[in-house]
Length: 243
Ligand code: F6R
Image (cartoon, rainbow, N blue to C red; front, side, top):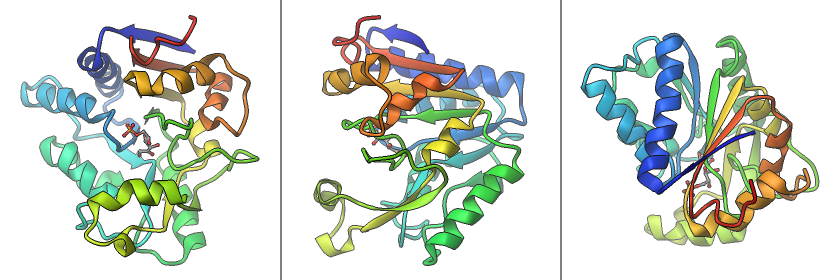
């Protein structure tokens, strides 16, 4: 694992964007694995800025997102498709038909997940996977469990996630109960992995991810076994980690 410590969130975002930009520049037809959540927003902002300056070209890039709520349409402003359009795709010259997110509107979970694995395979796999880190060590929607889920699968959202998400919806009953997510095996198959982490609230879990035992109770700890992982984290997030 390569760990870059940055002064703050802005520097973390710039550094991560540089890594993604190098990937796109060196391999204009690359496949990027992308994430939603608050952490990568600054990274996407930098990429948009550099695209607007003429320094980056996304026309050959394909993307596959980590996850999507089951039951939400792309037009729903809480869907991860909507998030990606709003925070990146609408602002750069990526071909939207080459941007993939699990199909939240497919009610048949097995079909949705099988199709998504097939899409990733058909692109030749993911060259660079961007990840955020959950407070409990989750990546994608892979929550602490007794084993590492391998492929894209359907997860039942925990009560705490439903409670945390309900503020974004009109009624609690509108909050999706399930989501489709790449599995740990899908994520580990990416050629390179880039993890962005910011804030003291992630300090404890980040230390466990980097220095703790590899266990499905801390899903991101498996990244210790990947041959090409870069973590870009700010001082606050690394405040409990001995490097
Ligand atoms: C996002 C995702 C999640 C987030 C994680 C961290 O597609 O799958 O695993 O990366 O929950 O979220 P933030 O960045 O909001 O702290």
